[in-house]
Length: 319
Image (tube, rainbow, N blue to C red; front, side, top):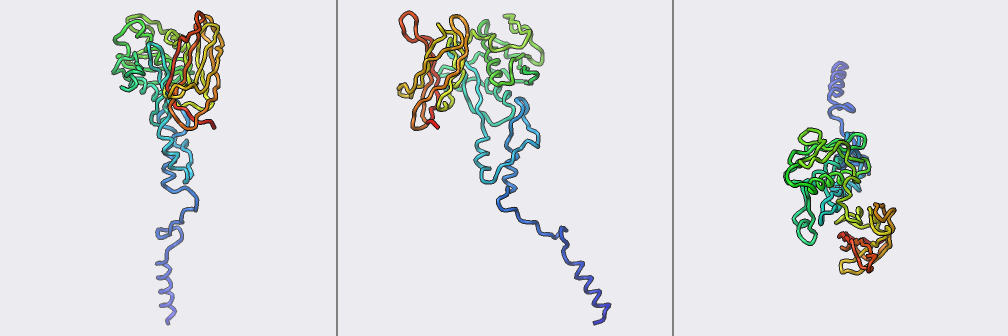
């Protein structure tokens, strides 16, 4: 063969061959055991801990989820537990509920609070209620130096008088200060700072704190566990009390009324002052089942029960 013809054929073959990394290069297979594209996308959709207020985490905060646990993690992350403060017989009650997973937990808690009790919660025997007027909307919420600034529509100030006005403020303050980073609350209505609330002339010159609204607490205020929550085992029972000699009783009760555990509790202060309490109570059940946490004190006159409160909870076997 003529050498010129041979050289031409060699050049044609080289031009038609694929180059490494070029348009015709074959994509390398995934590394065995590594995350698939679907798992990586799933991981980026799960929020990580962040601001109480912001509803969108920074892109770099998305955790990596192993392929084997991607689906269970996604299911668990779809909801979170929060507490809102409603009223029962005119006294504040912490009520646990589930909301869609979010980093903006303060905003989510306020939204749930403004929605009020469900029909089942408001019906007897629960009889949970709210003093916040229907139609009140959350315009904005921000956190600065430990103070939550909550902006509500003017409807929040409408209707009611006296105790009703103080009670609705108490609901907001207790709901937002459930978060350790929130120590107080200031209010705005339709974007304007509030220093005198309602026709009652309630003065709000500084941040409102929980102690401002203790008139809305039962004398034994069970703050945790919340109404409708799951009770760990052993149970942690905490709150505030203002009872004779700071003494009262806490019980874990089965749904049939059987007392599973009982504990004498001493608050940090009594006889006309509010004292904290925080006790651990082990109890025995063989399976997850409904039950109650009950608190009460005994009359100094005749030893009968008084000042009782009971919260429905879900009991759990010990670890």
